[in-house]
Length: 377
Image (cartoon, rainbow, N blue to C red):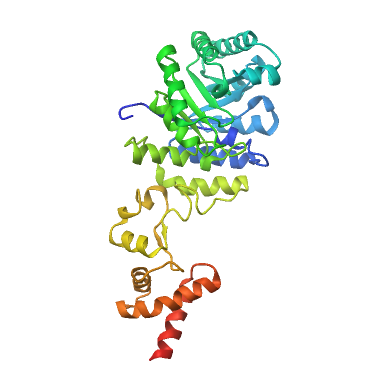
């Protein structure tokens, strides 16, 4: 992937807010847009202008900020939708329509020909108004291959700047994604954006597989927020590209934890301690062997430095801790434990952790130390 111009579209404000039960206040949408801009994402899908009301007002305010990033509005292939986007001041539009037969038959209750007619008409209208256009193939992953290729050629001819390949219900695997996206890139030659959902826990892997196959854009949300099981997570995709593939997109990744915390609070959703990249446990070490290794050399058990994503390393003292962790923790308090003292104290520490069913707080450790050595000396 090195040398490729890979770009990030963040759709936290559109697909992220479509999470069941999530609503962002307008001030929160504006704040999130500012954070994403500072972070350095290349494009923000900021909402659905045709909804009007607060949605349109928030979009207008975001556009007035004159951020460095591109601002996109999401639309059906309907002229009034695109007019609403243009009225908000966006510089890019997404024109979305289903391409799978199950959607065409049961949701749209129409035909493939109608789909092609509507999408090309809408794309051409948007291009005449000078905006960047993403033609979204909703449920692309369950679409007939030949029809999807026909759709891609049609929107390219109508002027679309890219095709959004949507794994709408998250049913594909990375190997299949790779083959299908590569076919579109090779046979049609239109830039492709990956839009993957996490129903089987493969959204990030599928997005990266699509990029391996030649896709130029990846659609993401902060913390993977999104409908049902969510979308590919911004922080996972960017750090995987940076660390695993050696592709640094230039984003301020040290802001990831801050942005994740803000979006989680705004969405009124938990930021799990075990969340990949930004969870508080990402650099927390309790198991004795792991903690000993990371104290000797961080890369023994860490793929990258915690500061890269706005976190800090933690040595947690609990049931599974060893003497190395104990000595390092007491050194933080200015107390030098000998190896023998640590071996004596460790059973008491483990006993307390089992009793409390959690790691121990600093004050608890100090009290155990004082009680134990006070009694034995």
